[in-house]
Every structure is written in C-alpha cells, then in structure tokens.
Image (cartoon, rainbow, N blue to C red; front, side, top):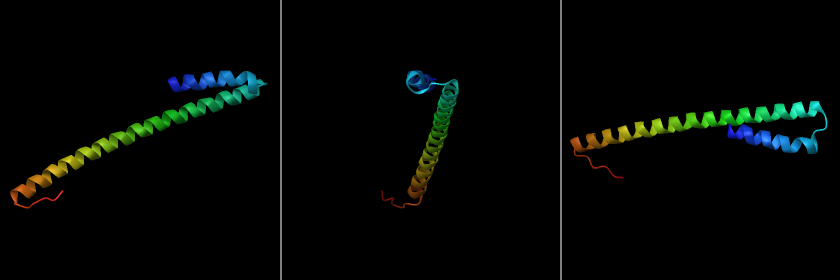
Length: 80
C-alpha cells in the first residue's frame, strides 16, 4: 500500500501543474494505477523467485550431505 500511496501523492502534486482537464486527470490516474499494479506484480514475482532459490539451496545442501556420507562410506576423498 505504501507504493500506491506514494504514487497517489506524486499524482496529486503533478495534477495542478500538468493536468488541466478531467480527461488528462483520469488518464494520469489510470497510468498511476497501472504502475502500482506492475510494481505489485514485480514484488510477487520476486517473492516467488526467492522461494525457488531457498528451495534449491535446501536441495543442494541435502545432496551435498549425501555425497559426503557416500564418500565417507567408500573412503573417497572429497576435494573442496
């Protein structure tokens, strides 16, 4: 909500200087809403990507521990 609030404040400050008609004001409002929706979509995408990265880190850690156990069981030296 803070991004929408910031965009709304920006729109309100720009309205007296740049918009002289209701049509321009409606267009600016629509553009600001679209920008806020795009930012929200980017945040959701980034959150999903972070979840994927965390999941991959967990898988790699499990595989690493499995490799270490197999190497120890077979007396194979692991070079890191």
